Amino acid sequence: QVQLVESGGGLVQPGGSLRLSCAASSSIFSIYDMGWYRQAPGKQRELVAVMTSGGDTVYADSVKGRFTISRDNAKNTVDLQMNSQKPTDTAVYYCNAVSPTSPEKYDYWGQGTQVTVSS
Image: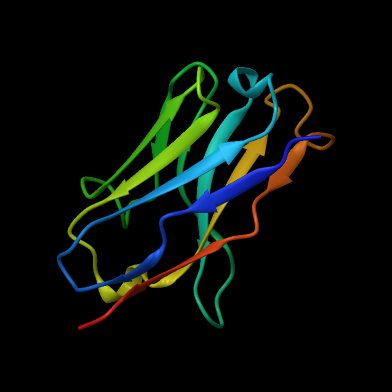
């Protein structure tokens, strides 16, 4: 069982920056693919960024060049640095941990953290 706790959400003005952090409870964090997803009101949850256990990254087109995902396997954390934020980035952001070999069995979510981009 992996428990994920997000932090760092809040209110930011357009063009501003926020950094989200996700702390994982598992000592085997390093073998999981870690990702950030978001869900805006009335919309489906969507992928924001993923970093695989091997260090490869995938970003949604809407955040490329603005957001950066990073992980620290020694600290069991994965962060999302969000720059040049837009009102369309407003959403609840969720941390995800999934086993690359058994995704149907080992797939965990955090409780979410609200990010609001508004002037």
